[in-house]
Amino acid sequence: MFVIAELIRSLALLLSLVFNVLYFLLIIRILLSWVDPDPYNTIVQVIYRITEPILIPFRRLPLQAGGFDFSPILAFIVLSVLRNFLVNVLLQMARAIS
Image (cartoon, rainbow, N blue to C red; front, side, top):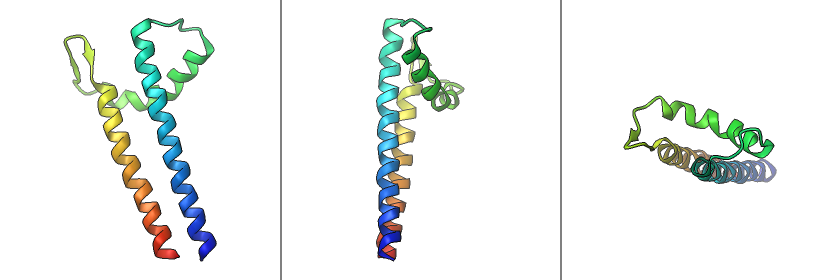
């Protein structure tokens, strides 16, 4: 059972790392929106492809005020809650198994 518990702990850490990368990419996306980058740049395209599916549901909500889009802020909050929930559930499962 120890091996399974460690695998679940490792999965929790990996999931946490994935969420951290998503946070970082969202921050880069926000900063890129301020400088109007070249849309044909490969790095910019990759960042947009990764972050756009996250932002689309939040853009459907009326979160714009005065030309400022609050959807990335809400995306950060939802991702943070989701990360905390999923990682804590996995860690509790690992503790229950070991």
